[in-house]
Length: 80
Image (cartoon, helix red, strand yellow):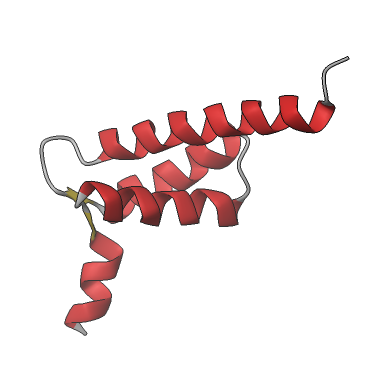
């Protein structure tokens, strides 16, 4: 009998990987994710990928960092 935790972990891992791909697409050909796209990505993480807000936010920031993408919201904070 398959372990429920293992099955749930695999499903959540696939969702997280797909969400990371989704985040990468938000930048388009630019190297920046605009604030509007950040919000859309967070909403999609919750509604489409089954992540919590905290998980979606962490994945958004981690993916941006790993892919060398700037988040407009972070750029604005550094300019204040």
